[in-house]
Image (cartoon, rainbow, N blue to C red; front, side, top):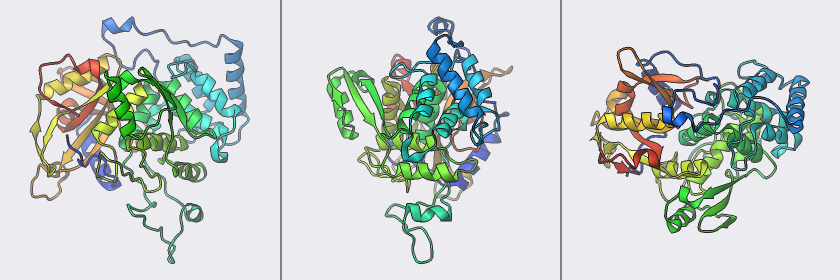
Length: 461
C-alpha cells in the first residue's frame, strides 16, 4: 500500500494545469443538472426491475403543507428567492425536484424524505445563527445539480481576520504549526467526492445530513451494520476504535454513530455564510467535508489549516485509500474495497500496473452498470506535467474524481463521464478511456462488484 502518494496537493495552479491537460484530451463537457433517479445512464436489463418508480406527486397533507411552506418562504425572501449560483428561482428547482422524484425520495438512514428534511431546515433554528432559508436553498441547489459541490476554500477578508485568529504586527495571518489559515486550495478532494456521491446517489440522506449538520447540535447520527466494515464483527469493532469513532450504542450487528466535524469547522462555515464568493465552498460544503475529513483522519482534522494528523498517514493533507474506504463504507452502510492498480516504489516513481487496463475498465463499467458511481484517484508524473525530475515517471501530483457514467462512440471507443470538485465547472466533464485509465492509481467499489473477478492479481488497499 502506498501511504504518502501525492494525491491531494492543494496547489491551485498545479491542479488547474492538470485539469487543463485533462480537458485538452476530452470531448465537450456534459450538463449535470439533476436527471430522473431511474438512471443517468442505462443499466443492465437484470437490474432495471430492482428500481422502484420515483414518487413525483404530493399526496398527503404533510407533503402539501411542507411544499407550500417552502414555496411561500422562498417567494417572499429578498435574498433566497433565486439561487446565487445560476439565478434560477428556487421555486423552479423545487418543481424540477418534485417531477424527477428527488424531492420525495426517502433513501435515507431514517427513511425521511428530502422534503421532510427541507421542512425541518426552515422550521427549526440553525447553528451559529446561520439563516435557515439559506441552508434550505443550498440543499435545493446541490440536489438540482450535484456538480456545484466544490472543495475550493474561500478567502478570509480583512474584516473577518480578527474573528478567526490573531495576526502579527504587520497584519499577516499567523502561521500555524502545519500551515496557514489563509488558503484557497484544499486537500479535501476525497471528502468532496464522497459528498458529491451522496447528493448524486442518495439525495434524501444528503438532505438529512445537511439538516442535522447545520442544526444546533452540528452533528449527524448514522446507524450502520457492522458488516459494512467487515464480515467479522470483531474486525469492524477494531476499525471503529482505530478511527476514534465511539458508538453511542453497539452490538455485534449494528452500531449507532454520532458523526461531527472538527471544532473549527463552524468558524469556516460562518466565514462562508457572511463572505461567500462565486466558486468557493458553500456552508454545506464546509460542514460535509470537515465531517468526512474528521472521520477519515482519526478525528485529527483542522478546518482552519486544512491539515490532519492521525496514525495512518504521515502526509499532513488529504486521505489515503484505506481512510477513503472507511468513510465510503460508513456513508454507504455497505462493505467497500479500494483497489490499487499502479505499482509505485517508495520514492513515488510509477513502475507499471498490477493488471491490464481492460480490467480497470471492466471494474468501472460493471459498477456503473449496477447503478453505482466510482470515486477514483488519478496521478500525474513529472513527464506529464512537464516538470523537471530525476525520473520522468516520478509522481508529482494527483487528484480524486468521481466517474458517473460512460458512453461508446461510433468507433467503439469508450468515454468516461466524470465529476471533478476542483475544476471550476458546475457540470460533468468527459475523459477518453485511453487517456484516463493509465492514470488511475486506485478506485473504490462495493465488494460484490469485484470479489468474484479472479482474472487479475492486484492489491486491495
